[in-house]
Image 1: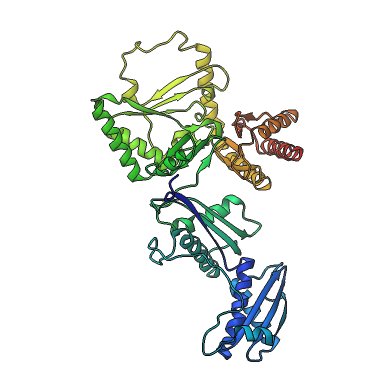
Image 2: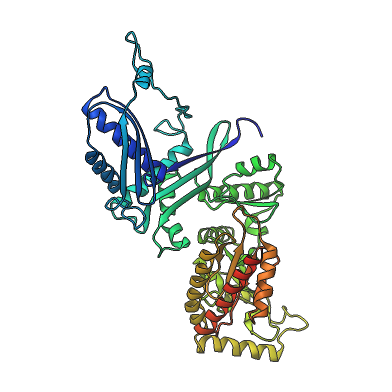
Length: 508
């Protein structure tokens, strides 16, 4: 990697961070003395711990009684927003041990012969002015500061509820030719009320990231799916992937959903068609895609599918969905593609089509399905009477017994309970994905390393307790309860899963 191509990370802490609280109080002490005598000399250190504040140091200046200092300390804590059980401006034990500066130190810091001698202590600061932002600050630290500043403003105005004062932000940016080109990761850690789970905290915080960082910089963080493969979700034109390739990563996948990149992809496709002397309207018959990626119940962003639909419509191609796993109520809708807000031209179905006997079918619009002549499309085992009867009965039961609605309603319960389990074991269980009565629990450690062997053990323990789950062979365990399941049985199965996770983690 060239020296002028690099990743740069900056970190900021909120006003409620213990270090920042101490700085705020120490600054207040300095200001208090300087406001009374601009020639005061103040060296103040502040320590904070559970509901306790300790001030120590040396002062040369006007007399300020302890009660005034203690009162101002409480005002600082109140303004920050701390009124918690463990730290409150009302009840905190504030102790001050400030005393008069010694004559020896005074001699060292006093000016001689009308020359400034500077401070008695020395510090080294890192920083620089640049043109990356209007504030002339490096972009990573500027964005880190701004995220926390916006959060603090809304918290004090009672707009940001459930989020407490102590927060930390970290922004990493990719630089090319010494210029920032994109954000590769944003990390926000914050105190929050007990009633907020990780998904809710994420939902609350993400708008502040999007409000702070310009869209041309902002992407989701790199997703490491195994030891060798990295997905760059929001890759733009792939410049970050080029850098990673130069660093030695060989298996790289880029996904970009923004409109300008979609247009760029279209232009590239048109260029390819031109080079191959192909016509999109005549030589592209269709695009086929899985409704979701099976291994981890990974659904596409709606915008992506809608752009694919737009593209196929523009070139007169068909859009087909593989509904083998998603179809017939599994995701809380009759077909999974309906979550994307698009119309499909063709659906390939199976598995849930009969829920028993082998049955595969192709569904499509009348305009498409009437194109072949009657009898021209057939196969050796087509139209098996028993399988067709099973499929018809299955569809009737789905509608009559409201099984699709049951999938939708109990799907909410399934994901709510799995997210609770994820919060409990967050160091091993990274996140939950899926829709309706379809879910996948993704097991990775804090470094993004897949925990496949842990999944093996969890699956084994579940089976021993009468619960059948699917380990995909990677870092995910999939759930697909029967659509007719009731709430009691669903919760019983999830209790078994939680117990298995706890035992397996305890064995490590």
